[in-house]
Length: 325
Image (cartoon, rainbow, N blue to C red; front, side, top):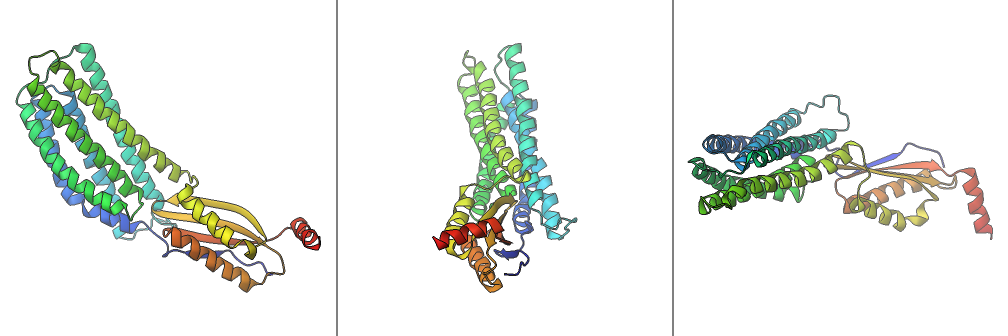
């Protein structure tokens, strides 16, 4: 068998991540308007009250505005098809965008926790003033807007595993959780006004919002950093590859390295297979095509590369001995 170049077989061509960014960027205008409205209402409510939880909610609105800018920038690059020398597409940029969302959430988390601790050390005070009513109205409107956007991103995430889309789903779950906590907290402040319990509602609400931020930022950062560091894919990718290799067990003579990684919504699979000199190039090529087709049938986003290698002389002798016995 003559040693040839590795067979590269793709499931749908090279992905640049443009589809994900275009879809995410399409909502940027609506989100920008919603962010400005929520931020204006939140800022007014904060200024007219002394609520730490309202500050946390305002930070989430500002965080969303920051992510709009990041997603818009990535979408603009994708639409203009500016590769910036990224020959393997925008996968890493997508992962970096997801990590940026997680970093923004961690910064907001630190500010909220610091404010809550400062409030507890200076003495518990009830939130009061017209800011409560404005906060209720702003969070009620935010619930509607965030529910609509979350539903859109959730539907998109079912068919698109882009880090941009996943991070937006996590962000809007966090924002919707914050809206619900704020509505309950502000309503509780009205109900328990003048009672000792009322003074504890605001710091408890702010800590609940901080806990939600911490949980979702951890999930976003964990996956984004794994992709940036080229961590191996999970069993959802490893198992179909293993099953495909098992189905073609008699078509190759040795198994070398098996590498998998994610880059944005794209999945890369690299398999090294060893062959004896008796195998023809046509046989190796048929195996490459069949193996790739079987893997991409289970993992449509996969780009499969099969690298043929000559079986070592020592392993060839072992195989000959096994056949002779």
